[in-house]
Image (tube, rainbow, N blue to C red; front, side):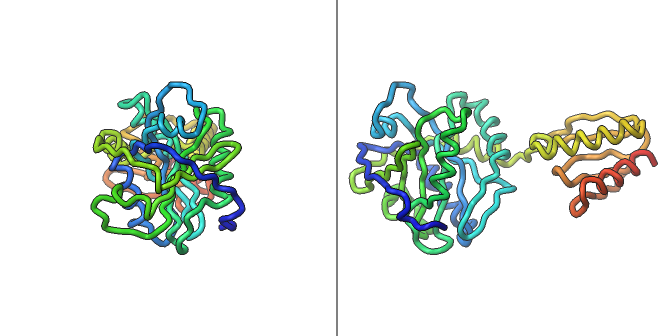
Length: 288
């Protein structure tokens, strides 16, 4: 972690911050699961389309609804978090079907794994500004919510949020810290978005939806074509399954793991093998 004072945090007075109570429950649940390493998630919500010129007006037009967890391939250490953006994007797309106006508006993480640190690090700010520069991101601001003090078991964390959380408004020019003494929470108990996130997250994300998975599938198909292997491919649930004309079925579990089904038997290969070795094994099975 870089020194906390390298970024200037400008105090920002706003009338209110609109947040779903389910957001705070999700934040504390994430911390409870990973107290010794940084963890967090992608904040989603709604933004009013009226023109907003000041930071206070931006906050007034945003409403935090929920959070998509950091994901199964997130990299977590006591001082850093690299979220699984590919997985989060797929979960967001699933939820977006039910809530077409839902948007990615920020990020949550905690700094409780190495002691109390109430400010964003330089690395945090750099990452948020990288998102702001992404043409796919729709806004000129980024909300960063930080849990800076360990806390567990609060029945209503929204009632004492200022003791444990800091909220930042990040722009390309400045980082603003909402003043907890003057910021009033407008909480609502609607949890439809949070419930949709839970449902979407419970279903696996197929490896074919990741670039590495698509590359591995292309390599397998290319190799089978070279060998003249007769096959068909289909999407079975959330997994791509290759059915060989003579031989087993091959199901892609992850970009480097495959299940081979022969009758009632299943063998998983590829976990510790380079792609070339995995291809050799799979294609050998396919033409045997």
